[in-house]
Structures are given as C-alpha cells and as structure tokens.
Amino acid sequence: MPSIFVANDWKCHFSVNTQTGLWQDFKTGRSGNFIHLFAEVENLSYKKALSKLLFKDLMEEVSGEKEAKIEPVIRKITDFPNFLEEGLVVTADSDTESNDLLEKAWMLLYDRGLFNLEDDETEPFYVATSGRYKGRLIIPFKDPEGALFFFQARALGDEQPKYLNPLDSPVKPSHILYPFDEAAASVVVCEGPLDARSLQLQGINATCTLGSSISDTQISALSRFHGKVIVGYDNDSAGDRGLRKFESLRLEKRMTKLHVCPPPRGYKDWNSAHAQGYDLKDWLKTETCRYDFNYKLSTLL
Image (cartoon, rainbow, N blue to C red):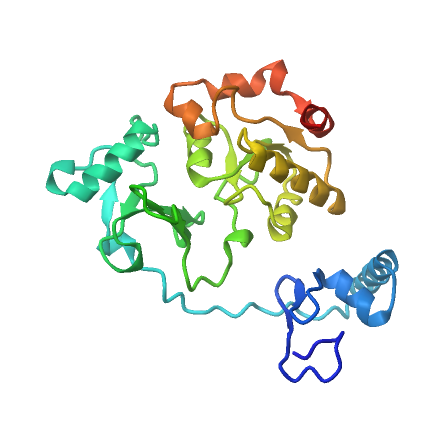
C-alpha cells in the first residue's frame, strides 16, 4: 500500500503482514509492530496506543462483539519436494553400501551422534536426490501429527551456503521454532536444529531459533510457554549478541526472567559436546550454569 509517511507514494512502499501485524516502510526505512503502527496513525505514544488497544479488546470481549478471527490463507508450497517418497531415507540402519550419497550423509550424522541407536521410531533424516537441494541432508520439521511443515537442507561438504531454506514456504525461518514439548517444565533454546536434536536425544526438551537472532514472532511463541526458558546459544560472539537481543525482546514481552546456560566450556555448541559423549543433563544441573541473564551479562562486559 502507499506509504503513510510519504505523500503521493504511487509505488506503494508500505507493507503490513496481516497475520503478525509487523510492518515496514521501504521508503523511509521505518518498521515496527501493530502497536507502533496504531500509535503512528493516531499520533499517540506507544504506551498510550497499547493502553487503548488493550481496553478496546477487553470491551469487545465483554460485550461479545469481537469479530471472528480471519483464517490465514494457505498457499500451496511448491518448493516442498516430497522427500518422504523421492529422497533417500537416512536412519541408523540404512544400507549405505548402495549409495555413496547416502553413506556420506550417514557418516555425518553418525559422527555427530545424531542417531538414536536404542529407538527405531526416531524421526529419520533424508537426502534430496534432485532439484535445488540435490545432495543435501534434509532436516525435517514435523508437527505432532507427523506432517512436514518446514525443513532445512544442509550441505554435506563445503558447499555454501551451508543451509538452504524452502523458497516458497508460507512462513519465514524467523517464524519457526524447532518442534519441542510445549507442556514440559523447561525448554533449552539453542541456535540450530542439530543442537536441538542433540539435546533431545539426551532427554532434554529443546528447540532452536534457526540462528542466534531471535525474532519477535519466535519470542512471542516462547512467551506463551509456561515453563522455564533457558537460553543456550553458542559460545561465541554471535551467541552473545543473540543473548542480548533475546533479553531486550523478553523485556518488551514482559516474560519472566531468563535463565542462561550456554554449551559446556570448551565446546562451541551443544552438538559438539554431545558428539564427544558429554552428559548434557548433568551440565544443565551444575551450579556453574544456573546464572540468570544479569550474571551472564556481567561476564560479557
């Protein structure tokens, strides 16, 4: 739509996501959430706009006049290859002698300890055999009913970029959390799906934000989690920056205080420690990792 900040914007530089309320003005570079937009249009402060919206929402609920929610438009995901039928299935007992590509994927997963050798029912990985993701390891993201809703395609060698996301997914990677138990007492939030898988294989509830920069959508989902949220980003500068952003958004969402537990000392990420046989449950229980955000921040300054 035309920009609300610039007159005669016939090129329509203004965009609003009707599902999330996030907006961006490509003419001026301004962006924000729906409350920011309401404040701009009504010429109000952010706090005043929030107050008016909350009051309006509550009054509509009391009077029963609240409009029915608009169902999201479901687009066909043309970029989702049917890996369940066309790809190579990679499990702990795959016959790797039949295919060099399968063997390469199997070795990568085995070396990283990502097979559950005691459970034949664990979710398998796949290898794409054609198209844009040919020769890449497919890390599936499935809902509780087993339906594929997202995936990442990881390079098996030195190909760049290391990870590819679906081109035509109805959701962005920044809107995705790796599947986890939403009724558990706690969840560890790490950066990548292989880290989350490593923690889950050791009996630890975990998810990931597909990188170290958590989005507003992801933290909104985590703010509805009733248990303890433990941030476990990598032991590097990107992980430290991600932690700061996490805390900033946490304050905006009025979430309870964060718990912070990075991977064990000497390891960059959770998978590195897991692959070396480190007891991650034991690490999460130690006093040395039970620091809150304020303690972690003091170590970074």
